[in-house]
Image (cartoon, rainbow over all chains, first blue to last red; front, side, top):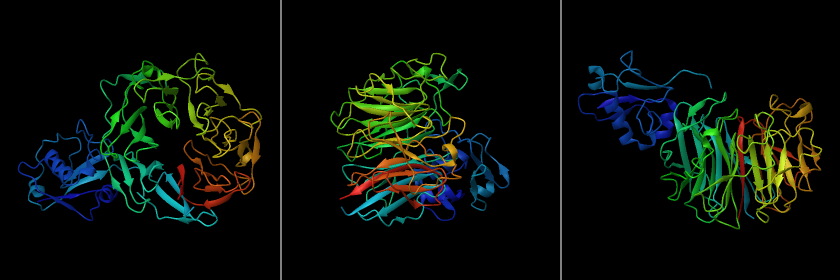
Length: 98
Length: 371
């Protein structure tokens, strides 16, 4: 299972507490993780990626194992520690005031 | 009358504020959707327990929430607002072409006769319709594509469709207002639209009396006389008595005719309320005095209403969707400020009390008189 950490507003929107666990087949990629996440929590469709293009929303970033995957292709394999469930995949709201 | 319910949208969540029919003591709910921008909430006139809410965030986009129990519990419904066909461009602030992009829902207008039907006015400006309780949304694209769309431009708040009025005597007729494009009318249920701006004048336009480009801030009508429309424009308070075919200025003796909100007394179609704001550069009341102005003559002659409102050091704004009236006797009038106050009057505006003091900046206020 893949561990996904969501920012506060997406946790409240999806009505989940801590980390979300999703099942993803290899290869584990950003696209595969987000597909599984949106399948499990449809309310998140459009909140992380654009509905139509599936492009990352501008103020959202993706981190894993201390690396920034925001600008990587969504089809790049995530670190093995993520696919083994040892480390979480982080969906992060870009830092800004408010 | 069992009670009155205010639906307050703010920059940091929504609040449901309730009173019994006396409108004397009010209970403010905990924040709903805390941290999100709630541009608008509105209840169905058919089923007051069905309430719609537009929840949005610059980070996480648009959600639409629906309550079927008067705001106690909520569930997200559809949030896919896809423009129909090729969107083309509108004008950017400097007049250059800019691609159409969905940003948020500004206004939700429930059907007058079907609780599952609701209209959504969005930024970038377009009108959407759901007939399945919000599960799906379809654009009424005849508005955006009728021919003038490429000349629409954003106001300071964005290029938003912010007002939707349904004619209670003719289900095929609706009015919408867009900043900064103008005012439009359909007579065929939303399939086709045309501008209704004759008589408007805006000095910021190269041609002040052009058909398109006016920054209409809000329009309002009285259900008993739907061909009479009142308008708060960027500057100027206007009136039409022929369903928007012609407009005339009724700013009269207002201290300034800039402002955002306008509404009509529930029982007196010639009684109108506005909140004058200093100017387009100074979005706060003149002289630091928060004054609602009331006309009992359908415009031109206005009187300040100040009892219970701050008359010094007040520098808040009252946004376009932040004023409403209830249908009780006497008529209640309510408005919210960017300083987080919600004021109410239960005597048609003669006197006011602060119902809430310290909310986040208020974006919208709607009221429901509960049976």
